[in-house]
Length: 480
Image 1 (cartoon, one colour):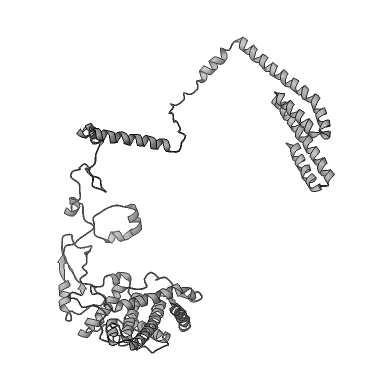
Image 2: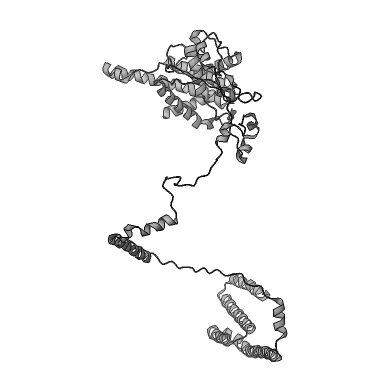
């Protein structure tokens, strides 16, 4: 495989010198894969001959025969011609060609495998064409086996009958150009001339009784009336005159009913297809095929769609509890064991906190008129009691504030001497204080004293950067 990979890179580099103006992926892959495949098959035959010289006659017979190098050259010529047809024939015209039912011979299986390996190594190293003008537009249309079979069938059967294939000078010049490039890329030996395409008598297709399958047109003329039959003639890439091979052409001429599609509507299909649906014939609603699809009677489903087991309802399931089997003591004992096992199994599971969901009705809206009436009905005694309560709360806050004012000055002075003892007194005051506003003032004063003590400690230790940060924090604290 290393030899093939290196040979593929060498072939691609040589192609860039032969075609400096660039090319497309179909032509480039055709010439590089064919040249690499011919050199690979040439080395394969040489190794086979060396091994055969060392083997006995019995071993040679068991090994069997294979295609010669000339046979492989003819096959590569047919492949190059099919690539040229791909370049000049649209896919719609190639789809209308005749269908060859004959299969490839057994000896071509090795050829196809080797050729696929060559194409793989070429495509896997396509990055070598990075600075070369390579058109990758038709990357999805690199080969057409259907077209290759048509060309092989023509040169094996129809060309010998006297049918000359006149495809024009453009296609033939393109084919000669591709084959000349292949001969230049192959350096180990000389390949044959582009003409004639078949130099050997070896058939690549197996012989069958009916090698051609008629492709009959399903769609009739849009302007013809429905119900009229039309004459369908086999469409081929290579059109044959009636005098040659008339038996094949006459067998393909037959009459068939004018078919059509069943009308249906789908937004996704309509958007994807566009105007193509207008060119297709559709059956009318009164057509017997369409009318046969209409359901005249609906039936109940009796079985499951996937297992075809009969469907059952609650009545069928509960009816089984009252059959004769329920009276059997052994059956009842097994049911009892089963339920006991289920209970023990449930208890062994991890405890999961259950959540009780209670549905509540909508809460009634508050009646504004009722609330207003309750306010007006408030007695004078209630008003006096509320005012007295407010007055007591205000007096309590004033008392706590006076208490804090007497303690704050002593706490701030003693905080510099002994921080821990003063913090304990401050915490005791905060526990006994009931006014929230006074608590905020006391906490703020305690934080300020702690910050000042920490700054003095840092200044004594010589940590100026920490003091600077603390100063900035103090400014932020004062702005709060």
